[in-house]
Length: 220
Image (cartoon, rainbow, N blue to C red; front, side):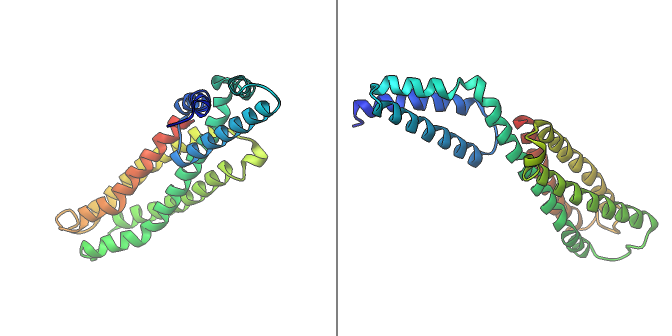
């Protein structure tokens, strides 16, 4: 059975932390760390006020009051969560696209691996190469800006929204290019391996990027 004193502590501080939890959106692990940090800070402050002579409930009430109302402090916490989501999304884009050249070669092999010299295929393949390289650099810049860049440019929730839009753009552009490459691969649409492997190696990762982009917009 929980002692009455501990129950009072849990009720007041946990209610505040629960309210803060409901006000925030973002990566679960980062959010849990921020909430744990807030809870520990409240506990330490309440313990200090109690040691100074206040009864426990008054000590907790004062600690919560000085910590700040949830609507006042939530935006700063939300910005940090948004930046964490932005970093994760940018890194996801980077690793997905960095793996695509190897995966696409495997897809082509499974689809037959012949006749890749048509002008249409070469044109789309070159577009994929240029767009992929540019996207990799953009993803690195976005991840850096949401991490170390905060020291120099400050926390910007606009960056998180921009990363979300960037993720959706990546999904659209590379979905179209992937479909074109698959369609221009001889017998790929008739192959038992060509289209399904393109779906697995490209479609599912792009869907994951789309979900991450949506989370960025939600957390911004």
